[in-house]
Length: 211
Ligand SMILES: [Zn+2]
Image (tube, rainbow, N blue to C red):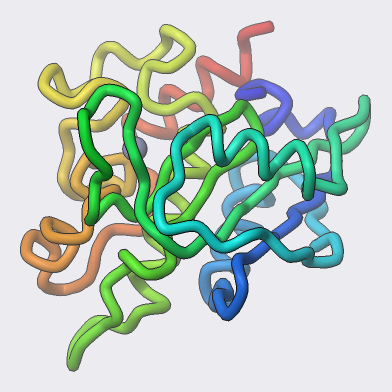
């Protein structure tokens, strides 16, 4: 998926946002995902109609995949990539941990799909809005769909040895802590980063050039 999302010879992208009852994605986060696809992938972006998702207390990767298989209406073609965003209630249950993981705010679980855990995203405060957190998390997960960090073998030079798949730079949106509610609030007092740094861009260039 990485190269197709990043290469402008695949000229358009469709974003589908499906939501659990009562959940939504801010316009700010929608705009951020669309603009990064345009900026880094050369895409004309359109939003597909939104659909509904079930409500669950706990979501495993298998649950996310099952719901995507049932509810996703868009798929990629030769000249259009489809990006699927699930905005769900409940908490994530990571396959490597024995119990559910409160505090996880997002996960990329398929080549063209990611989930945001709406109830886990900080609700914002005086200085940082909920929309800013949502934007950062959504762009982070999109970055994983791009292939960052080192998911396609092009980013070892800036991968955090202690946090696989993530940047060692806390000024990059691909920093590991972007996926966890606690650090999201404590580490990023002026608001979490929502843009890709120079190393991320260098890696994207390598992914773009790969087949
Ligand atoms: Zn991540």
